Amino acid sequence: MTGRLSVSHVALALLGVAIVIAVWQGTIAWYGLARIVLPTPFEVASTLAHLFASRSFWHDVLVSLREFLLGYAIGGVLGVLVGTILGERPTARMTVGPVIEALRFIVPFAWIPLTVLWFGTSLTGKVVLVAYAVFFVMVVTTARSIVTVDPTLTRVGTMLGMGPAGIALKVHLRAAAPGIASGAKAAAALGWIAVVAAEYIGASAGLGVMITNASMSLATATVIAGMIVIGIIGATVSWLVGRTTAAWLNY
Amino acid sequence: MPELTAAYRQTAGSSRAAMGDGSAEGLVFERISHTYVAANGSTPVLDDVSFSVGPGQVACVVGPSGCGKSTLLSLAAGLMRPTSGVTRWRGKPVEPGTNPDLGMAFQQPGLFPWMTVRQNVAVGLTTRGAARSDARRQADEMLATVGLTGFGDAYPNQLSGGMAQRVGIARALALRPKLLLMDEPFASVDAFTRLKLQAEFKALLKLDRPTVLFVTHDVSEAILLGDIIVVMSARPAKVEKIIPIERGDRDRAGPGYARKMTEALRALGVETDLSHD
Ligand SMILES: Nc1ncnc2c1ncn2[C@@H]1O[C@H](COP(=O)(O)OP(=O)(O)OP(=O)(O)O)[C@@H](O)[C@H]1O
Ligand SMILES: [Mg+2]
Image 1 (cartoon, rainbow over the protein chains, first blue to last red):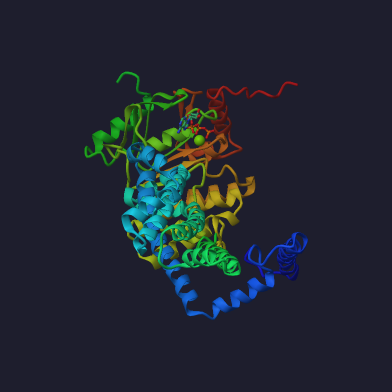
Image 2: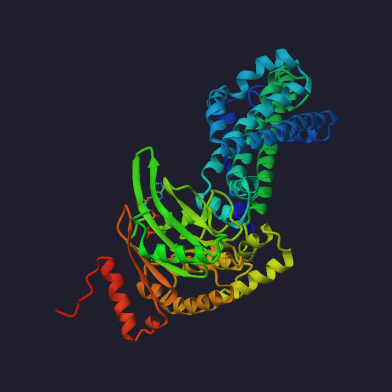
């Protein structure tokens, strides 16, 4: 997939967008929908243009991105760390494994009311939530990737004279890197979703807040424009993570 | 230990008398039994195996598939502990962990997929303290020896099975080990390349005179390379026979070769007389 984008690829992608816009426009015409229910693609496009020119919009984007990046970094580092320990140590797996399995199914969104109670509408609450979401994805994928490393590689490491620490870091963690990278990509998507969801419920700034405010003042075009921005940022972040890791796992 | 084989008594006994510090003992298996225990049952693999390989000696191990030859190598390498018995290297019991004298070529090559071929061969040298540039040069030399000049920058997923196996061999040989364990190293190369590799290997052995345990399926290879052939029985494996090989036996056209061949195949339980039809 690293090759140049061919003309037909671009054409097909544009065709997909065109179909969505046509269905959208068609739905408005067919049901005779009011603008307040569903604005036209053109109105949403011009709202987007207005947003891009406004300062408060970029402030909201930065707030959301900052919450995301902080949470992603904290959750990612802790997740890989704990995942490595669980992958290396069967006793740790047996002790902590069940707790993690149970917590993993308390989805991040279930924690939102509690984080609002504990941290109010501050940055901390969102960062904690993103870190939580990212942490569990990374713990599970890291531990699983390490456990499934080809045992011959471990034997080779011992034969070559690497100690247990050397084998854990230079063989296991390195061999697990492709699995960890795909986990990092999934975690980025989940973390970004968590930011927006948390902002919908309790926040003072950010894209989620911008959208809920617009919704309350019946500015439907702004709501949809905000949703599009969220989608674009999410896709970009995921693409960047995939791209960075692919360049590094190029073998 | 009344059940020790004659060969064990000979080599171990005489060398102990000679040195006394154990360094002249080479590799000794003393009443080794091993059983793999898994959730779905246990598999007895080795049953009271004793023999020794004197320092600088080459022992070729032959035996039916699945009898425990790779298991024997893992025990010699200290990659695991036997269920009972002791393995000694230079007089000291082999403990799980790293043995600085060891070089091993595995049955599955086990190359690190994220490293180039050259890095795969060099990494053992740098781990053991060699300078990067020296390691690189030695790796390239060893790659040339196994016929892989020009593949130093390739990644393992770009190699054929036989090429990957040769990288594994180069990685083991580059360490210039005192104890060399090889698990069917030439199994997946063509007959012509194999002959060349066997000749190169023999020449390398002359340089350092390591103690070698060499697993093979090919009895003619065992006669060509070995000082002794250890024939193992089916699982759970015992030592069926130890066949000493003399210099003269390696002449494929000579009577010694045919005699050793027949002896080994008989010990393996193979019917060799195909002359009647
Ligand atoms: N880790 C393991 N756990 C359980 N059983 C094992 C394990 N490794 C090997 N075995 C079993 O032990 C027996 C001997 O295995 P081993 O690999 O030593 O045989 P081998 O003589 O090297 O065979 P081959 O000639 O086919 O390479 C086999 O029956 C195998 O199924
Ligand atoms: Mg084997």
